[in-house]
Image 1 (cartoon, rainbow, N blue to C red):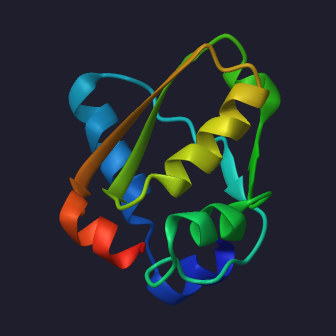
Image 2 (image 1 turned 30 degrees about the vertical axis):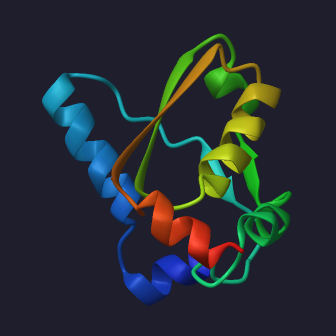
Amino acid sequence: MSEERLKERKYNQSELLANEFCLLSGKETISVITKVKETERQANLTLKERLKNLSSSFKVEKNAVSGKKILLIDDVLTTGATAEAISKQLKSANADKITVLTVASVSICENLSKNR
């Protein structure tokens, strides 16, 4: 989430979910992903548009993930574009394995009809 969006919303729902998950599982929360580019809201974009919109939007602290297994926690999975964009950055920073955990997802039928 960008700094501007965080100021608007006053909280980062994915960060809250990650903190709670880590508290319950006894794992450490590390925040190594920064959104470095303001982007258009994703809601009305197709998968292709979302991927383009998110291109070069995230930065990862390289030394923080090298050789590590990463659990990427997101609130909603719609097309997977955000998870894909962040995962690419994590891989380029030499993360060993990336698993994505989401709390909710948009149904495939709804998703397909929106992205035609």
